[in-house]
Length: 154
Image 1 (cartoon, rainbow, N blue to C red):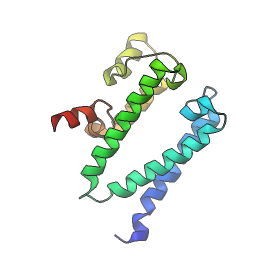
Image 2 (image 1 turned 30 degrees about the vertical axis):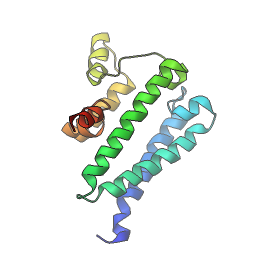
Image 3 (image 1 turned 45 degrees about the horizontal axis):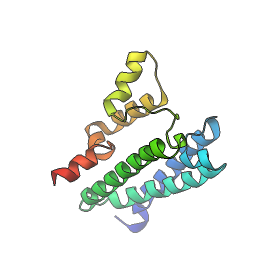
């Protein structure tokens, strides 16, 4: 694969990620992006950083030889950030929690809670859409518990 062609997918991922997060930033009254909750306009910085991160991950995950190593690194990074944000929400400020209300960070609860209450949420839609797109890879790429299970099994 030529170097230029190798950059098409990361560029597309950057544009896609930036566009989706910009739509969230512009259309949601309650700030969903973490930096926006603390600083007005901070969401745009977060959008740029997340878009760069997403395109960088895609760039390095294109090589089948190095992809498993990168998967483990990105998976663990995601899990550490997730639990650090949860701890910050519990110990520092409720602004670190998406709704300001604590809920159990258990993937099965994302579905069972709204089913029990008879209501859907943005988190339910996000979970179902990522599950539909990734299938069984959800557990080895996106589940915040899985990275620690993987590390402990080694």
